Length: 514
Image (cartoon, rainbow, N blue to C red; front, side, top):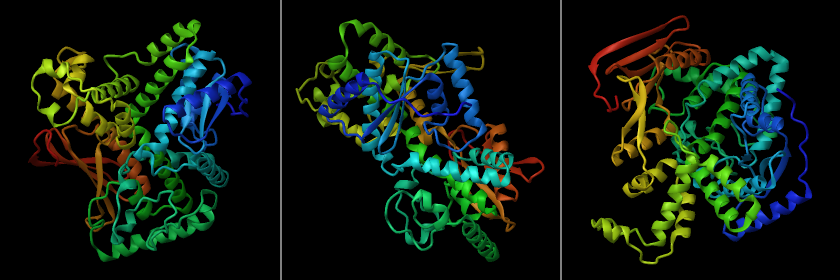
């Protein structure tokens, strides 16, 4: 993977374009952090994208693998990254040097839509707004561990941590905990004083290793673990969804391992809102680049270039949901409805399809409504609240799946309820299974027992076994998970040498939680 050298400053022509795009965005009411654009070539952009947008991130083999994939896709003409923007204050965005002026205008307008979303959407309100500096601090700490303990050992441990980075509670930053429940409180970037019972004191990223030395953290983890084991009681008292935090606070890890695990967890929480708002975020940015470009940014000779780019961005596929397309069309649908007054009790109670089709009270509240939607919703609530029967019919939506009998992917249904339920199901918990820690002292032997809240979809057995093996490396004792396989309650286990499973005679109805 190539080193990422200093980026080029914007040429004067693009500086002027940025000023115009920023002015247009502000005139429309967009509110964003200061935005810094960097000019990069294709190789640099692929490298930055491989690092998740953070060129100073910690070193790891997976970033090199992702770079190779992106580079080959670009070389073969299969894919091209047009824009990359970072949720930070100030926001950083990267422009591809080989793009024409029309594409640069479009990308800038698109970026300002993203920046407005980052700053104002509720689900980003708890994220670290100085993460680009924090990522650099993470990278320096991990590089020091690599120098001290060896690259291979640290990379292998990072592999183990990454295998469980999805086992967090995406809602925890917004849950107010009681004084007796501080053990599982998410540490955000506010200036509130930390509770005396917390493992860490609040500190700036560059001071964290001094204020909270890993050796002290490891000693506190071991003290708590032994105290709980000596009681001989099950813990936690209630099931805990943030498996990473539970492991971080109770696993017998070395000081440097605890620090690395905390780094992976912090980054997982930083990226979580992006997974929760992919449809809305891309739809919002596309809405505004379309609005700004069609009204202010296109010169007649550039129209074909702009149309071609937009057609590629919004292209639909029967096998893959396009978040740009769905987000954009749904926002336009909302704006049209609220402009025509198609909301409220009278609208909902009307059962005359012709009357509803011709309904127009001249309310003209559409623009205010989409700004409200941008502020409070995530993808799940967005689709649940605003995906209507009329929208599905207008956009000819259908659900698509694999037919085991024919061996082909086929249209499953055009029924509105089934389409909406499929979408909501895929968006719930960002499409991940619900995994909880039920017992950290299972059978009074210090073993870890997890619970899969079954919702009709079984765990992939090979993934579950690999995750159990990696949790064993972290926990140091046998690990178990209760799930449902073939309609039976089943416990999967790993004791460090072999996998085992035990089935209950109890049958579980499809779609019910165990």
